Amino acid sequence: MTAVCVLDPRVDPQPPDWPGFQRASQLHPVWDYELMGLEAWLARNPPLLALVRQAGRIVAAMSVMVCRSWRAPRYAPPPRRRPHWPRPLWAEVYQPWLSGFPGVVFAPGLDQDGRRAAARAVERALPRRLGPGLLGLLYRAIGADLVPVLAGRGRLVRRTDPAAVLDNRFATEEEWLASLSKSRRGGLRRQQRALAADPTLVIRGGPGRDDLDAVAIAHLINRHRAGFGRLPMDPRTPVAAAYLDRFLRRPDVHTLTYHDQDGRLLAVHTMLDHPHTPVSQHWAALREADGGRPNLYFDNCVRAVRYTVRHGRARLSSGRGLLDVKRTLGFATRAVYSVAVPRPVMGG
Image (tube, rainbow, N blue to C red; front, top):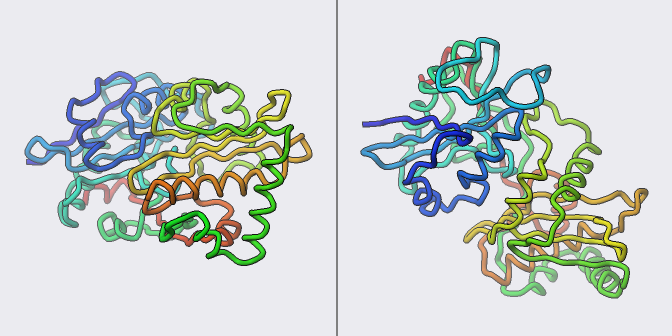
């Protein structure tokens, strides 16, 4: 028998079997239930966690963002148990802290038919939870393997910006450098020497850092994002310092910072550790016109690849931006799709 539970991590207690599913499915740290609850309190479009169980065992999970008009208030409405949104809204299966990865995960070993049945069960449950205002559902950042599971009659499948990935076939960092073009390889080595010799630059990195100013980091990330303008149909909320203060202390989150000699934050990078695929998550830096330094982005890339190679990870994922630059660093692209499901065909 299939059962669906839709949880609001702001107020609903963590299911006792959720940590076990996280470990078995090797989920990245952004799926931590406490973190999802903190994010939901601070978000305009709060995530729900939908779980599908068969014979009492979790077989699927979805991070479901409840999205409203941009004219709506900045913060989400209060948690409620009954359908309560008569105004139009839509739901997005999306993990906003994990670029290029879907917001739906399935238990290891679940076949295509089982995955399709689990996804349709959540689609039938969401209108009961969200009420008559629900217009439909959008699956974001779906890999090619999930398109047959989530596509179907009346559903729109669209290929979107791909994600950058580096398959780790290297025994050493030098092997990776040797695989690059001569000009790129030489440029990276010169940059590394120049940064190491700069006495006015302070570079620190590591997991679980408790020495960071979360306010300064949130400000830099949001400033960096704003410099690119608002992306169309972007449901994400500005990064909150309260979230980062908890998040960056985790042992599976590595934070790399660049400061000048006066302590001013110049750039920051976060990487989510993982036994198979670490993820280069946030990158933000001051523009040179505002006092930033050149080539810090390339230094951050070298350090991420170095970690991946030294620790024997199979792949490094690096989001969906700057693809031309990342190709020169050996990254390939992975196809990413979205699947739009109008309300009349949800669950069918």
